[in-house]
Image (cartoon, rainbow, N blue to C red; front, top):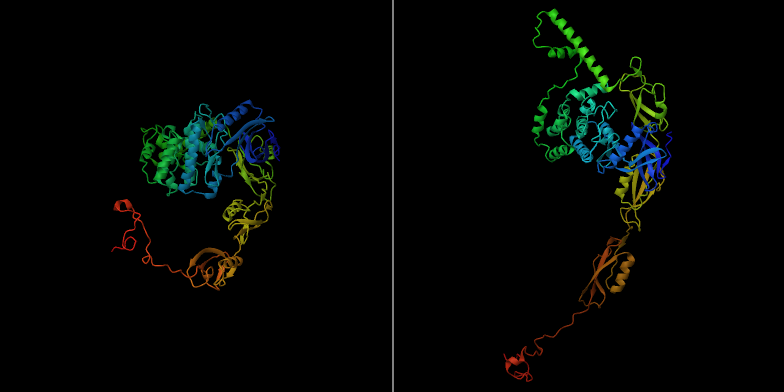
Length: 605
């Protein structure tokens, strides 16, 4: 077991489990007790901690990454040193790598590839604007979250743009995604990240890498001199404009690539808005030839033809068959000699990949060992590098033991001396969340996202206290431990239970008695109207619900109530009221003296 598990750094970060290994550091899942959250802690390897140069680079990395704050870049929370351990505290990502995603999906739909590469370029645009080059863009360093967003991770070999590093000084990145200038050991800039991003886009669109080979050297040489198949030759569904964007990003000549991540983003956005957009200007750029023709890797049976094309043009053609056969033979020999010289030169540049007596090593069986144990085995120590790809559940091995390896045991290797392994995963414990009060749809989503294949059943029941649609309780109860395939019963409220009510006759009751009776039966009383009637005032003369009808509890009923017989009113024309004139002074008569024959105004018709 890793000796760091259980340690508390700065009395704050508790190391829980090892979740990743890198060339310089190990990454642990940890709990921040101060903020009560899970984080990732990257710790410089102990065997490198005594090296001043490694410590300097580790601090440089910390300072570089701490400058970055972007939605598509893994966040850095803290940089510190504790008990002679230098470490970085980072955001813990709940997701998988883009490499794992591609392995599951295979060849992606171009729309999905566009979605991912756009986010990658946004992250790089932010980093490049602050003078930081990632230097190791590859699907293994890109995390895909559950919501479909991506975060670029592991700026572990990032350096400031003015810090020149070469491939011959250190093993940087994966050879399948390395830029030509990195392979040559030249000074690099932001365009190297653009090349690597183009390779990632190529892989997403086609389901394969642009260059494959039996060794790192052969792949690196292809990056230097070969031209890959166009994506549309592999997948005809790739839009032409997106293919052109990809191939421009992957141009081996940095001057013909996109000058910046922002420039590539502009074309991606232009394409997103109109997939049929014309980008012929890129095609014209791609057709321009460099001074040196790109060298294509060729099989042995085609070497003679390749060699003949390079011979002097003034060489006289051979007429006789036996002379032609000799020429062919010499051509083949010359071709092999040229290949041997090329391989020798490559070994000079990239280093000798085999240190054995004949440069060949047999891969040992390292399954069942921990990584630390395997690294110290006689057939591994000083020869092979172990790269942890991830972890998987297994009943055959103990947590932390190597359960899968590639290459398998007894394979021989002269180069590419890396054994990629999967570890047996720690058994992750799951607990029943507290779902009480959650909406049933939210509860279902939470349980589905636990990814342990629970058999969830929802049961509806009446509850006077819990609103309809909310969770009342669960079986098992919250905080109970869950296992894969467990049955979970979730009780969801239907609201208050309603009972059927047979509507009686309220006719003849007083309004007060009718209301009391209706409420006793569980009916809701609505509005009341009044109407003239021969029935005694205050008695119910009509009801909105039919007698003997059956309704649900809580149904509203309204009543019509008698206001008695209508009282007759005298005709106002029989005894018109006395109304003084509006302006009595205007008549010229004494307003105190009634005018008209009968003493009432208006009778003089």
